[in-house]
Length: 115
Length: 114
Image 1 (spheres, rainbow over the protein chains, first blue to last red):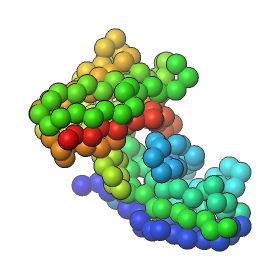
Image 2: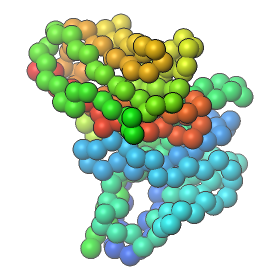
Image 3: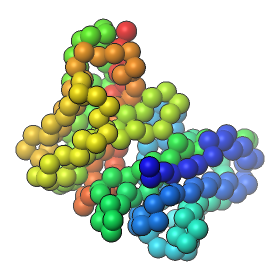
Image 4: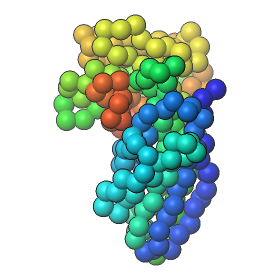
Protein backbone atom coordinates (compact mmCIF):
# COMPACT_ATOMS: atom_id res chain seq x y z
CA UNK A 1 0.00 0.00 0.00
CA UNK A 2 1.48 3.28 -1.13
CA UNK A 3 1.17 5.76 1.70
CA UNK A 4 1.59 9.37 2.66
CA UNK A 5 2.13 10.06 6.33
CA UNK A 6 1.69 13.24 8.32
CA UNK A 7 1.62 14.02 12.01
CA UNK A 8 -2.02 14.77 12.79
CA UNK A 9 -1.13 17.45 15.34
CA UNK A 10 -2.43 19.80 16.41
CA UNK A 11 0.66 21.88 15.81
CA UNK A 12 0.37 25.06 17.81
CA UNK A 13 2.53 28.10 17.08
CA UNK A 14 2.35 31.72 18.23
CA UNK A 15 1.45 34.44 15.76
CA UNK A 16 4.50 35.59 13.81
CA UNK A 17 6.41 32.32 14.25
CA UNK A 18 7.44 29.83 11.57
CA UNK A 19 5.20 26.77 11.26
CA UNK A 20 6.86 23.64 9.89
CA UNK A 21 4.67 20.86 8.50
CA UNK A 22 6.18 17.56 7.47
CA UNK A 23 5.20 14.66 5.23
CA UNK A 24 6.82 11.38 4.25
CA UNK A 25 5.79 9.14 1.38
CA UNK A 26 6.47 5.56 0.46
CA UNK A 27 6.42 5.54 -3.37
CA UNK A 28 9.99 6.35 -4.41
CA UNK A 29 8.85 6.94 -8.00
CA UNK A 30 6.45 9.78 -7.16
CA UNK A 31 7.09 12.89 -9.20
CA UNK A 32 4.58 15.52 -8.11
CA UNK A 33 3.94 16.85 -4.64
CA UNK A 34 1.27 19.20 -3.39
CA UNK A 35 0.13 20.97 -0.27
CA UNK A 36 -3.55 21.69 0.25
CA UNK A 37 -5.09 23.85 2.96
CA UNK A 38 -8.50 22.87 4.32
CA UNK A 39 -10.45 25.17 6.60
CA UNK A 40 -13.01 23.55 8.86
CA UNK A 41 -16.15 22.74 6.90
CA UNK A 42 -14.57 23.70 3.58
CA UNK A 43 -13.00 21.78 0.72
CA UNK A 44 -9.23 21.51 0.17
CA UNK A 45 -7.50 24.36 -1.63
CA UNK A 46 -4.21 23.91 -3.49
CA UNK A 47 -1.56 26.24 -2.07
CA UNK A 48 1.79 24.83 -3.21
CA UNK A 49 3.20 22.37 -5.70
CA UNK A 50 6.77 21.12 -6.03
CA UNK A 51 8.32 18.75 -8.53
CA UNK A 52 12.11 18.85 -8.05
CA UNK A 53 14.45 18.63 -5.09
CA UNK A 54 15.08 21.79 -3.15
CA UNK A 55 12.99 24.73 -2.04
CA UNK A 56 10.16 26.56 -3.74
CA UNK A 57 8.96 29.84 -2.27
CA UNK A 58 5.64 31.60 -2.78
CA UNK A 59 5.03 34.54 -0.49
CA UNK A 60 5.06 33.32 3.11
CA UNK A 61 5.03 29.68 2.02
CA UNK A 62 8.07 27.54 1.21
CA UNK A 63 7.80 23.94 0.06
CA UNK A 64 10.84 21.71 0.45
CA UNK A 65 11.39 18.39 -1.30
CA UNK A 66 14.01 15.71 -0.69
CA UNK A 67 13.32 12.73 -2.94
CA UNK A 68 16.23 10.69 -1.58
CA UNK A 69 14.71 10.87 1.90
CA UNK A 70 11.12 10.71 0.53
CA UNK A 71 10.28 13.78 2.49
CA UNK A 72 8.35 16.94 1.70
CA UNK A 73 7.69 19.86 4.01
CA UNK A 74 5.83 23.16 4.11
CA UNK A 75 7.12 26.17 6.00
CA UNK A 76 4.82 29.06 6.79
CA UNK A 77 6.65 32.21 7.82
CA UNK A 78 5.10 34.96 9.93
CA UNK A 79 2.17 32.68 10.80
CA UNK A 80 -1.20 34.38 11.15
CA UNK A 81 -4.35 33.22 12.95
CA UNK A 82 -5.94 32.99 9.49
CA UNK A 83 -3.44 30.22 8.69
CA UNK A 84 -5.17 27.98 11.24
CA UNK A 85 -6.42 25.05 9.19
CA UNK A 86 -5.65 21.45 8.31
CA UNK A 87 -2.81 21.04 5.80
CA UNK A 88 -2.94 18.01 3.52
CA UNK A 89 0.10 16.60 1.77
CA UNK A 90 -0.62 14.91 -1.58
CA UNK A 91 1.72 12.81 -3.70
CA UNK A 92 1.30 11.50 -7.24
CA UNK A 93 0.59 7.81 -7.50
CA UNK A 94 2.79 5.81 -9.85
CA UNK A 95 2.46 2.45 -11.56
CA UNK A 96 5.98 1.58 -12.54
CA UNK A 97 7.27 4.70 -14.26
CA UNK A 98 3.83 5.94 -15.30
CA UNK A 99 1.72 8.48 -13.45
CA UNK A 100 -1.66 6.92 -12.66
CA UNK A 101 -3.28 10.35 -12.53
CA UNK A 102 -4.33 9.92 -8.92
CA UNK A 103 -3.06 11.73 -5.88
CA UNK A 104 -2.59 10.00 -2.56
CA UNK A 105 -3.43 12.24 0.37
CA UNK A 106 -2.06 12.20 3.88
CA UNK A 107 -4.42 12.46 6.84
CA UNK A 108 -3.48 16.12 7.32
CA UNK A 109 -1.86 18.16 10.07
CA UNK A 110 -3.99 20.61 12.02
CA UNK A 111 -2.25 23.95 12.55
CA UNK A 112 -3.32 26.36 15.25
CA UNK A 113 -1.84 29.86 15.21
CA UNK A 114 -2.46 31.63 18.50
CA UNK A 115 -2.67 35.44 18.65
CA UNK B 1 -17.59 27.31 -15.36
CA UNK B 2 -15.10 29.18 -13.21
CA UNK B 3 -14.85 26.41 -10.63
CA UNK B 4 -15.94 22.87 -9.92
CA UNK B 5 -19.64 22.88 -9.14
CA UNK B 6 -21.29 20.22 -7.00
CA UNK B 7 -24.93 19.70 -6.18
CA UNK B 8 -26.68 19.37 -3.89
CA UNK B 9 -24.54 20.96 -1.20
CA UNK B 10 -26.39 18.99 1.47
CA UNK B 11 -28.44 15.83 1.24
CA UNK B 12 -30.29 14.03 4.02
CA UNK B 13 -31.70 10.66 3.06
CA UNK B 14 -33.27 7.69 4.73
CA UNK B 15 -31.35 4.45 5.04
CA UNK B 16 -32.06 2.24 2.04
CA UNK B 17 -32.82 5.06 -0.39
CA UNK B 18 -30.75 5.79 -3.50
CA UNK B 19 -28.98 9.14 -3.96
CA UNK B 20 -27.36 10.91 -6.88
CA UNK B 21 -24.60 13.46 -6.48
CA UNK B 22 -23.63 15.71 -9.36
CA UNK B 23 -20.34 17.28 -10.36
CA UNK B 24 -19.71 19.83 -13.11
CA UNK B 25 -15.95 20.18 -13.64
CA UNK B 26 -13.96 23.18 -14.81
CA UNK B 27 -14.35 23.62 -18.55
CA UNK B 28 -11.48 21.98 -20.41
CA UNK B 29 -10.38 19.76 -17.56
CA UNK B 30 -10.07 16.23 -18.89
CA UNK B 31 -9.68 14.46 -15.56
CA UNK B 32 -12.42 14.17 -12.92
CA UNK B 33 -12.15 12.56 -9.50
CA UNK B 34 -14.49 11.62 -6.71
CA UNK B 35 -13.26 11.42 -3.13
CA UNK B 36 -15.07 11.17 0.16
CA UNK B 37 -14.12 12.51 3.55
CA UNK B 38 -15.66 11.20 6.71
CA UNK B 39 -15.75 13.39 9.82
CA UNK B 40 -12.21 14.05 11.01
CA UNK B 41 -10.73 11.71 8.43
CA UNK B 42 -8.54 12.06 5.36
CA UNK B 43 -9.57 11.90 1.74
CA UNK B 44 -10.61 8.49 0.44
CA UNK B 45 -10.28 8.01 -3.33
CA UNK B 46 -13.40 6.61 -5.01
CA UNK B 47 -13.18 6.87 -8.80
CA UNK B 48 -11.26 8.68 -11.55
CA UNK B 49 -12.23 9.55 -15.11
CA UNK B 50 -9.63 10.59 -17.70
CA UNK B 51 -10.87 11.63 -21.13
CA UNK B 52 -12.40 8.73 -23.01
CA UNK B 53 -10.47 6.07 -21.11
CA UNK B 54 -12.18 3.47 -18.95
CA UNK B 55 -12.60 4.90 -15.44
CA UNK B 56 -10.43 3.78 -12.55
CA UNK B 57 -13.02 2.37 -10.14
CA UNK B 58 -10.53 0.85 -7.75
CA UNK B 59 -11.62 2.98 -4.80
CA UNK B 60 -15.35 2.27 -4.87
CA UNK B 61 -16.13 0.63 -1.50
CA UNK B 62 -18.94 -1.64 -2.70
CA UNK B 63 -21.13 -2.40 -5.70
CA UNK B 64 -23.71 0.00 -4.27
CA UNK B 65 -21.52 2.79 -5.57
CA UNK B 66 -21.32 3.72 -9.24
CA UNK B 67 -20.44 6.77 -11.29
CA UNK B 68 -20.68 7.93 -14.83
CA UNK B 69 -19.39 10.86 -16.80
CA UNK B 70 -21.41 11.99 -19.76
CA UNK B 71 -19.90 13.74 -22.75
CA UNK B 72 -16.58 14.08 -21.01
CA UNK B 73 -18.01 16.71 -18.69
CA UNK B 74 -20.66 16.31 -15.98
CA UNK B 75 -20.38 13.35 -13.64
CA UNK B 76 -22.95 11.68 -11.41
CA UNK B 77 -22.05 9.52 -8.41
CA UNK B 78 -24.89 7.17 -7.45
CA UNK B 79 -25.16 5.37 -4.12
CA UNK B 80 -27.83 2.70 -3.99
CA UNK B 81 -29.48 1.42 -0.82
CA UNK B 82 -27.66 3.95 1.34
CA UNK B 83 -26.28 2.91 4.71
CA UNK B 84 -25.39 5.05 7.71
CA UNK B 85 -21.69 4.45 7.09
CA UNK B 86 -22.09 6.24 3.74
CA UNK B 87 -22.53 9.52 5.62
CA UNK B 88 -19.63 11.74 4.62
CA UNK B 89 -18.68 14.72 2.49
CA UNK B 90 -18.34 13.69 -1.13
CA UNK B 91 -15.79 15.81 -2.96
CA UNK B 92 -15.36 16.11 -6.70
CA UNK B 93 -12.19 17.47 -8.27
CA UNK B 94 -11.00 18.12 -11.79
CA UNK B 95 -7.65 18.74 -13.43
CA UNK B 96 -5.70 19.05 -16.65
CA UNK B 97 -3.41 16.24 -17.77
CA UNK B 98 -3.96 13.52 -15.22
CA UNK B 99 -3.55 15.79 -12.25
CA UNK B 100 0.03 16.68 -13.08
CA UNK B 101 -0.55 20.19 -11.77
CA UNK B 102 -2.84 19.23 -8.91
CA UNK B 103 -6.59 19.16 -8.59
CA UNK B 104 -9.24 21.82 -8.05
CA UNK B 105 -11.92 20.65 -5.65
CA UNK B 106 -15.58 21.52 -5.60
CA UNK B 107 -17.29 22.60 -2.39
CA UNK B 108 -18.58 19.09 -1.77
CA UNK B 109 -21.88 17.40 -0.99
CA UNK B 110 -22.52 16.59 2.65
CA UNK B 111 -24.51 13.36 2.74
CA UNK B 112 -26.30 12.32 5.90
CA UNK B 113 -28.04 8.95 6.03
CA UNK B 114 -30.61 8.69 8.85
